[in-house]
Image (cartoon, rainbow, N blue to C red; front, side, top):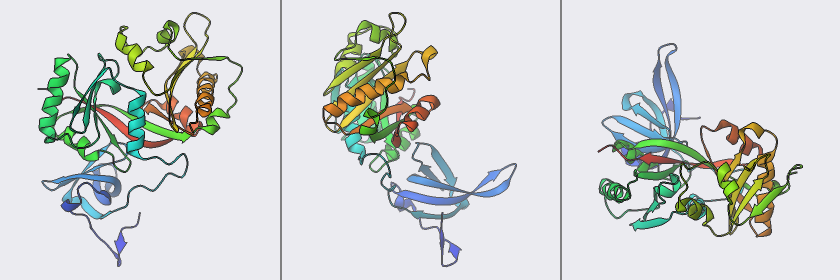
Length: 333
């Protein structure tokens, strides 16, 4: 990356640029290599007491002592994607929220407090979409009380890595002692290539509701609660897919929510003993064809960043990372 101007390196970033996307070069110490240059690109989330904090697209934070800064400049927002459908963060955030709805919700300014008897972090976390109407620390006090009344831990879901995401809020949560527990990728792709894939010889059954067998394969809860079916069944146009197994439990399952031009793929699970046999592809192909028939043209899904096998599968299907999202758990009192 080029930082030179008139033959010399320049630092053209100041504390007034907090909240902007920057590119910097700095010197870091390595016991084995001595001093060396390292680059960082991301949102400048703070510049306090002589230390810069930059939040990368993945949500990783880099802290740089000011004396080690060699060069820096403000850079434009990340360029538009070269593959996959055009999409903004607010549009995708709204689609993802409609596809995984809580049982109960309440507004705090432009933050949505969501609860579903503890079934998944997504349905039991704050979804911030703007100003909570209070200083962040005061808003978080309200959040903790709201979740405590429901005997649930308080979580806040934030996003990083796209225009309009919440790097500053993520940094503030960390400053206040909240702990990032999970990071996931939201990936997008064109829908037609998924529907055009060869599904293989297995039969995929589609239904509007999950039966008991489907739920036995979907083991993301410890005890059956009415909230499980309510969350899974909510959405604009919801479909459930299953591939029969040798016993009562399906070999593979999936869920798709069709919402305008978007088809969201969720709960794609395969019997661990039957993986790498094309079952996930068969499930997604069947769901994609149904979504295409209903007028959708683009696809999204979410996958945890440490799930390397699933990330490789979706990469091969044409899904590219749009942004990352994170769940922060409340600070200990």
